[in-house]
Length: 341
Image (cartoon, rainbow, N blue to C red; front, side, top):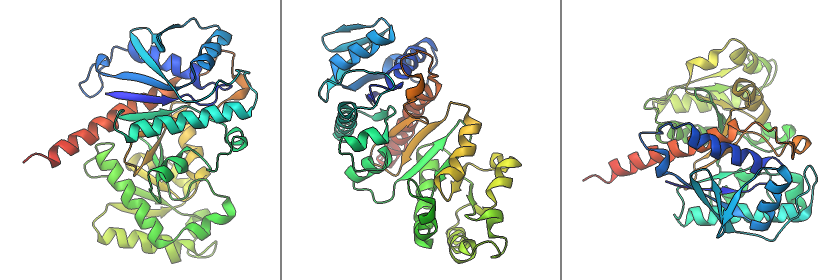
């Protein structure tokens, strides 16, 4: 299995957590879906000079030979994908944004060409990317645009909790205008398919959160549940999808009702991701479902405030790698079954 990484912002913690995760991955001596670690290879799209400078300033001794970054037993080719950017931990620079953007584009292009089985994107700064001419709210929207997927599904997850988002990176004031019955149905169906084919859950059970406090309280605190969310749920139930709701978000997480479901569909970004990140405790993974490529990432940002201090927690990146291998394996199993005569 071949996995490619985008290098993220060279002034953040991305390459640090990448190095630690790769090191930890091989030390674990664990088997993922009955495949040995030796069956997995890693490459990274980026600039060789910038990567060398990054680890030199971080005071981590690395070996580079013939454009290969050697991490323990792993030989990780560095695929050139952008101009050099000076490493200045914690700062924002246009050149760092340009390098990060070109790295993402290169990793995605090679994955779409089937030269890699999955891509793991390291953290970027949206404001820095905007300085470099980036026109997307995030990785998710950019990758979906290139893949020509209209409504990608952003899922953040831990081992047992998976939160999908009905809307992603939009202002709160625009959420209710983007919640249409047809869109909720479409996203829920994608969620169901992903839980089944990507996460290997045969008969997923999905919970839907309400938009308003107390899930609208029968229309007294908002009408969206009555006019939009409940009709979507009823339509999905008629299609024999195991789906329930809408649930008041605070009580749903506060009383640990999430333990009874395989997936939770939140109506907007913070509604689902604040509790998920609290539950994940720094180990969550971001996965974009509904794409022709497998893409995961750690659930955190560049953490400029601690960049260069060599204290960043790498467990989210480690889990992003593990989840990528699991999803690729599950998709291959389904593909094989579909092609068995």
